Amino acid sequence: MFPYIDIGPIHLGTFGLLLWLAAVAATVVLHKNFVRNGVDADALNVVAFVVIAGVLGAKAWHELQNPADLYAAFRQIVAPGWSRPFAVAMDFLHWFQAGFAWFGGMLAGIAMLMWQGRMAKPDGLNGGKAAVRMLDLATPAAAIGYGVGRIGCLTSGDGDYGINTTLPWGVHMAKNALVLPTPPDALVQPTPVYEFLFAMALAWLLWQLGKKARPLGWMTGLYLLLSGVARFLVEFVRVNPRLYWGMSNAQVAALGSVVVGLIVMVATRRGTVVVSPVVEMSS
Image (cartoon, rainbow, N blue to C red; front, side, top):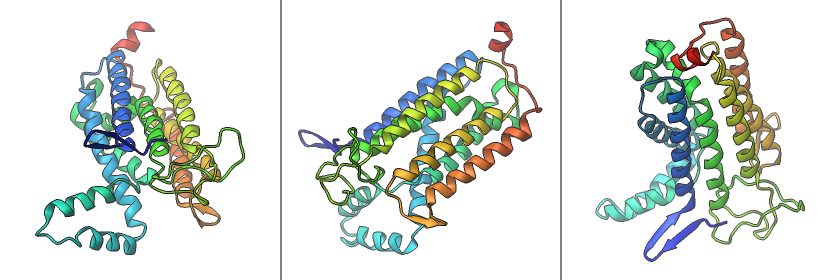
């Protein structure tokens, strides 16, 4: 693992690099989905806004879980004094490098995608239908982007790795990892790799299912269901503290995702079926 890459005076965090790569991969997949469905929208703009919203939402959700720690971090950031804005900015960037919550990022990303859908009006839809259609179109790209981004969590060693293990594929965290295991030289399960593999399989499934016309919102429900199941299961071998009924915060959120996904799939199974021009021609 490589938390940082130094190129001369340039000090790059691999989490940020993988986040950028995740956005690129998601943009390519979303663009191809727009093309095959005859949707006139700019995938790059859509993904750029979603990434910004997702990062801010993930950070906000993580920090607001413990207001006392957030206040302490703020005091540390501004400790150099406002007369030294560069030092304050550097402290802020260092603080912003780690500590993101998947659920907060997902909620913010969904909200931004829905807004983008209302603006783009895919397939000539308007209002809420346009917003939901954008969510459906973005599901394979979301799975790809999430999986690639998770590898950034592994390379940076930000604490998303798993419990100590003797499995042959266990990994060591580098001494300059953002969060070291206990003990520091322990082998741990590479849970981000598990999530990456599942995300790739989910993206493939969603892409294949997207070849046929589906009820509006059904694909979104399926994504919420399966991604929630994956996150719930991987938490059993992660180091997150158990807070509610023996479950981690992420597991509770994942269960919520599963429930919402099931409700959406049931509610939309006989709803409006959007048939794009491309699907019509291939049927």
